[in-house]
Length: 440
Image (cartoon, rainbow, N blue to C red):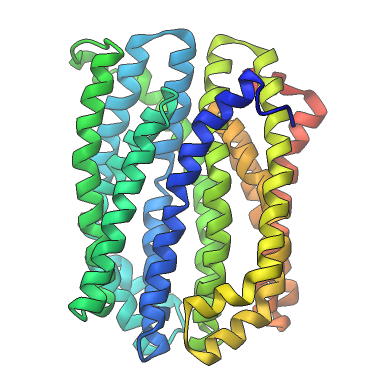
């Protein structure tokens, strides 16, 4: 890893550090959700939030291509100094986000019955999950548009605006969590309502920041014929299709863990929810550097600068080893303490400590998939990401199928293999053919 004084290192940190600071508030929200609900009288409240939020994550994060594709396309347009493409990357992605949000609101009444058929969770857990989902889904328009805004800001190398928006979102969410759950005793309904109000508040501020940045970039008036240009949408949809498949596989892994864990009892599904919070903490910290990789890779690819990209890869590799090691050490030394702070239910604490050793090794396995995802997103090489995820997903499914007699341990073993395969399959093309594969 190059010295912190190196100019490229500073570029990485100027994007990564604000995003890490703001991203850490996302698992902080999960920690607050888990702690607030985990201290209610029954474990099914925690299980219900875990199951309901897993479904919302599947629905919203499947559409995470809205942010990813917007970042890559915007960064490459910036590298080419193409103002038309800068306008188009925001407006076309925003229109797609609104259409998808409307579609979600139309079909959402049919989604929860599917969960009832697929899940073997208790009636109490399913009831609480439905309460959460039926409220939370109404944030879809704001949530999807916020993805587009974050992607556009990052593509323009602006990490301050995403940081402000994410901090605002999580602060409002946490405060309303405490008011609605502890103050008004709304239980699961309060957790969901807090998230909805936070998303719309963030969107309002985000649109104001778009107006400011639009003027700073001197992008001029909106040209409506460009908004409906078939060429722009054809590339956007092709890119989004492959990222969607990648996101589907990723989310299915975590949804399967939540659903399959529920079949082992309310205590196990609650313990898994606590431990997944650990992994989310890792992912959001690493995503800060992944965001930097997206923005800087996209700009380098747009400018056709291979030397800049080689230097970026060297810097990211150093941060990968450092962050993976730090998180593994944290979970080894303080994992039990963190578990105790998240839930006061003795049975859930015991189950979570039983599976804690899996979390100690996972950061070192997971780090490479997160960072290399950023490189491929910035290069808009979505097909390679799709193929990598399909391989990792197949390994996960096969591992669990062969070792399912190990019950919940099989889930964590399969997840470890999934993270390993994800990183290796993304690194292999770069090792075999070099960074030239990113410029195609």
